[in-house]
Length: 103
Image (cartoon, rainbow, N blue to C red; front, side, top):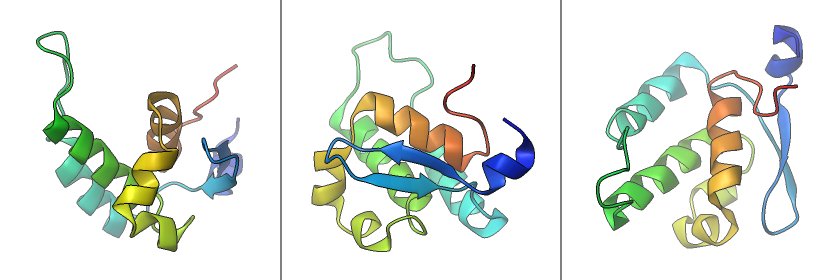
């Protein structure tokens, strides 16, 4: 996928069946996103994921979805209902300007 295609965004289907187009974060949103992302565990081998880890994931996803779906991004409960690990990974990749579905 070419960079200009990524700039247009990546359409991701969430567990509610709705498709949302996630675009790479702007520098302003990237600053906020990285504050959360840098605090997420890099290695979950020890003890798995805690509630705190999941809260950070939801916060990171909310930042990534601010422009794609502002209403959803501001509703943590609704966001938790439609996110799973696979979708979260796709959202993070798209927000960082990477192809979440490499060939």
